[in-house]
Image (tube, rainbow over all chains, first blue to last red):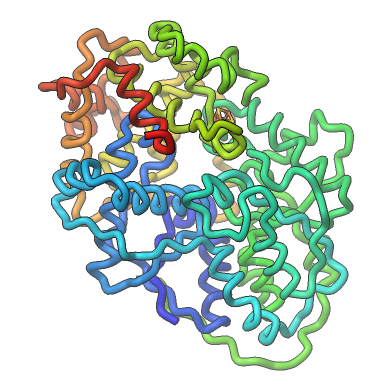
Length: 301
Length: 202
Ligand code: SF4
């Protein structure tokens, strides 16, 4: 399976481990990722909050590049990038006026046939393969699957099974042998892009998420977004200062959880790059059941 | 974010119905929306506050009525400048620009040592090959935005981005500077807002 790959800015820097684990895991699953050449930032909130057209045109260029480079689908592991790419495609399809303006801005033909994939959807579709290739079942690990905002909403963009009661991430986690826990804050917002500009909001919002996951008995919290990860992992120290329960909760990317089950090593998956130690998880990993051949994808340029 | 905002999504819709333009456009509340889409997903009347708030922000930004909390404005400006300059976000550069604009000089921001030891900070900016295309996108999009004649620029330090050595980079002239030019003659902003915003009702 060949898929275009849009890493986005975070995966090239602060969320390197997300990129590392995505590449390792997709390689092991037989998915070949091809990074879109010369991609640019999706514009994130700053573009769509101040100039609607800019918020569509930047990701539209990426879609055009993807089509030009022969991709039928593009994987955007960052939930925010996924949202912007999917939003651009949606708007270009339904609004000819925007499409014309975007064509004029990018100087490239409009491309709306490229399908935009979230990592959750990609893995949900591959859950049988994951089950089959799991050599280190994560039995006994209780995982709180956290969707946040942009994977599940808005309903015309999400590729998950339900807006209010999704089970896509839980499906994937189950395929690795881990047990998803039932909890309440799966779809709450962590504070997203206010990490730098309004940290107090991030602390307040993320704290309720962490507390709820802990109360539900989770050993780890699983995310599929670099911003969620940074807010819940990097900011966990600041959050704990004021929270009643100081127990730390490791925050893992979905790709790291799947990678572990497929037999990848914690270092290959970048588990050492987290701020909250993942020792609790790695120290109780079962032995790899059988030897398997790991093929790494040649995704990097 | 409702607990931190004076105006909650339903208040914003109410003011909109009442045509209380100035109040809405100059409110800080519209800048506290995280576009988490919860209100839109759960509105029983199929309203789309998240899109409406985006439209209000854009109008306020273009008309010079925007009054976002300083740090939020600093973040948006630094973020967009960084894309315009390199095509991608380079976190060191973003943080430098952000600190300068926000005055948050000593905030932990990215906790540089912790980030470095974890290999999480790229040390050199990457500029995409066809950066001209990005400049063109910015120029075209900003040109088609209504011209802001009474732009409430923050400090003069904000007008140009420097590299920390006091050098002014012409290529990084700020967004608002680039946007001066002729403007689209739009419909009255509030109409514009509801047209952009209520995609389901149109
Ligand atoms: S999208 Fe709606 S619910 Fe979410 S922060 Fe904005 S106004 Fe609040």
